[in-house]
Image 1 (cartoon, one colour):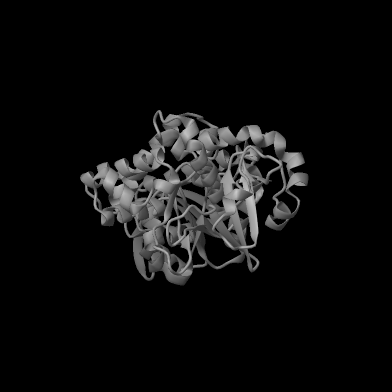
Image 2 (cartoon, helix red, strand yellow):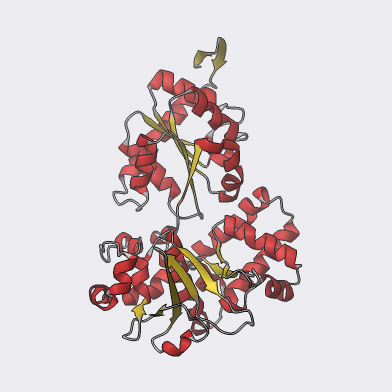
Length: 417
């Protein structure tokens, strides 16, 4: 039994606890060394760990590789320890444990997986930050709980969102090609030149949109992996963090299936309400929860005098795997738009969709970049200049998939990050 003194009080560790923690840590370190390739966010996590005085929380959809990232960090840093919070027996105080590890084993870096399994984790992290020099990076499969709790830690916490793969990252992880990132200015100015070197990857667009964007599908490329992740998000994360009833969960499934089977332009809070039999208020509540859980993206309209009904897009892979028998030709327009939104938002660009006061069809999106307003219409190779009726914005671009001479190949946006 381990006994130590903290603030003039004796604390006793449960028999075998430290031995078990150290054993699991050794396994995690070995596992981290098995994965030499790292997500593109890894260098930024290294920076936050070694150069910034912050607690870092990694959030994102289940299956994006958060646990592997922590284990890779553990393998790279001496004086560190990996701890899976869901393996700790009930009643253990994280601050006391961290203090013991620092004093006895000189642990400087603590990597905590599944932190939401610890009751009162926010207060314990705050205490570690305030009364020790230990640096912490943690993850949680419950993005909803972490997002809701970040204000309790105030200035001490930096949240790092771990997205699905970009198209570029997917190609690297599947050993199909290492391509440097493409700057947006270059993409707009010399698309044909850039496309000459990456057009062979056009054939990978479908695989990326179906399963490839989700890192968990590298090991198990099965639709059941996607549906199982969605089900865990609904059954565990939303039920707990959203304080929902089982009736709510049934309605959320209905909303998600409606979104997957519908075109993007036809999805609004009003249409969700009509087609699923819930109130418009409930539709807004459920979609907001889905956004917090990284299942959907919400894009607002551009302009001061338009109704603030958003466009609701699913993240890549969801539509293809939740539409259940809908002809894929009916889904391709939505899939292209979701590819575009995934990559421009992942590149931290500001984007809105265009909507007229009278509801006329306008080009799809407006992007704001270096004081420029850029309008984009997304579609197949047959799109033409006639798509830009109704907008006076000067810089207009057609994005085509597959790529064509009529505009900019859409897959170029997959290399922004």
